[in-house]
Length: 331
Image (cartoon, rainbow, N blue to C red):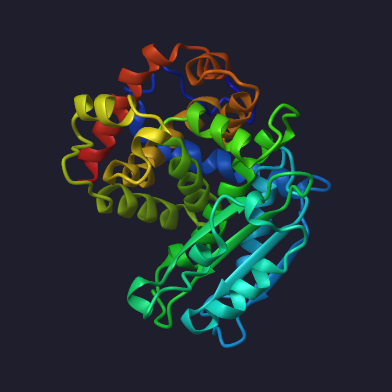
């Protein structure tokens, strides 16, 4: 079932195992068409307030374009009303914290993370500093935010030059549908519904899929990055080439089961492959429709069948085999 009718260049659950090696090619081609459709549409942009730490030296300064491309990619869904980007180095943590605390309407009750944790203000040195987070405020202020913590040494990887910003903005936009529900009055309500709805792989899988496909400058770069992620994200005690491991450790856990555990890291690799697979079946932005259906209170299995036309139980062994084959190819 196609959620996004771009062309006939989509697979089905009946033929995708035989054609699994075509998935990245199909994903890349369809994402480019869909992204251009978004860029050609009207009113896809969200206003951005871009804050860079006073002593922070950006080794990459095209992040605004990355944010806007992400907005264009998800153009068929609810927009974030405003987006507050924060990019800062270790020495600018205090300034970043002061800036975040001064954002319009911000209280700790309206943000999932504590602001001190977002700035890593308690780090004693750069060894515990870095990474990124993004999200959205609850309540009437449906604005998004990001905290991008960059080290003094340039990592010199393509992902940090584009993909990370797309990834983080996607984290914000993916929870946006939950804020539209009138019965979810505060952050506890909508976060509880969101986390209980979605499985372990979908959080980082959705964001990483967008980060690699939207930010890559060409097909070769996308192919290289996805291989690096698939082979480079090893989780002790989990074998992604084993379908039983995929079924047991990935598909049978929801977010509450896996967050904070090593298996959550598999969302960046196995989750990426799963979302690519679903994209090749139902279109580039179909995964966010799955999130949106969850915001209405549907169980994941019901939302999945409604969107993809097959039951989750029937789809799991097919997707698990694709994960195993793809992981083995890129071991």
